[in-house]
Length: 115
Picture 1 (cartoon, rainbow, N blue to C red):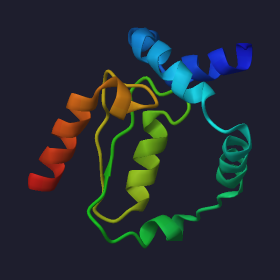
Picture 2: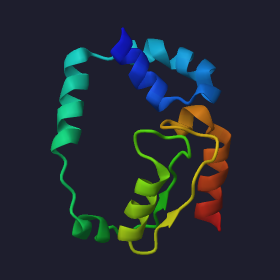
Picture 3: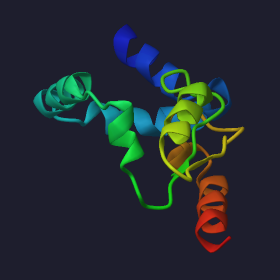
Picture 4: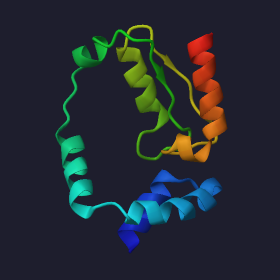
């Protein structure tokens, strides 16, 4: 299953190999048709700068520094489009910071909403 292993490697940096291994079963348990539909929907998603600019809620963009799929530069671009948004990079995370660095993500979110 080289495609699956490549996808998981892109989502979980080597420093999170144990989390990658634990997530593999969850990933493989996805319904293939539902996963394909989700992928197609994401591929069709077409947000213009103005769409992002209409977000009025307090917004924290929290990319993982080791995210190969949505690197911090993209997170910064998104945050720049949202009025008042803040972008903070999770230095030890990849694509799934809620699985890879949950404590750091929680601290960041709490700080954002209470600060």
